[in-house]
View 1 (cartoon, rainbow, N blue to C red):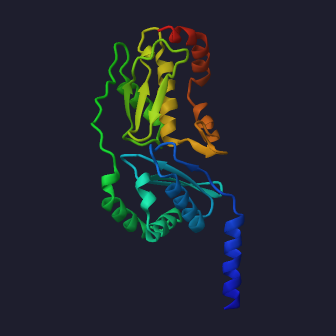
View 2 (view 1 turned 90 degrees about the horizontal axis):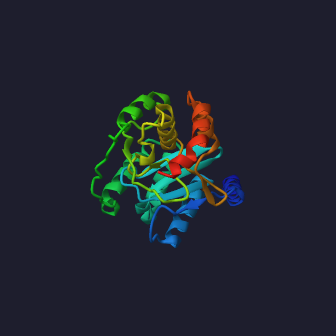
View 3 (view 1 turned 45 degrees about the vertical axis):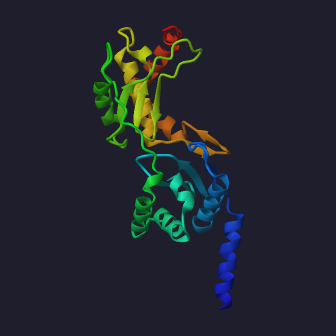
Length: 248
């Protein structure tokens, strides 16, 4: 009895002294901050150090990864109403307990009304010069660990700005958007392929919460980025032509 009490005290002291993770609620509008803090605290009590990212995702409700002695949980905001049973199931899922999946699936079904519905977007992959769908298919073998349902489209024209974002990746819809300034004959195919490769890597390496901010390109991302076959050539071309891209 005494030994059990000592063990419980030891575990409690370990939890109190353990490093605390980050709470990221930037992806959800009008969120209940107090509820988010309670959920974060409850998860850390069960799991240990947790980086909790709350989302308004419409496809994936739960994503759990282990990173260097801490856990990264990406949860739909519906989990703000989690019962102790659901929190225990999330903790079990983080430890690889397959039996926890049934509890999580049931909770998601019962709270599916929290998933925001949007109209399916019409994608335009075929440009005046380049067909992005063809380029994406050429790049997929280089990023085999990326989701197979990633989509691609030309983005909106953003002329007149002082900076240019050549591409972006949306986690919720798993969609790559490429700036239309790259749909030109003078833009070489290897550079467009590099931009698509860069954005596809984001599907594999999501932003990492660090010291209260989100690191968009963690070290693992940079290590993979330089493996692009014509990486150096792409960097040289971008530097030489960035002003021309800005003027389009």
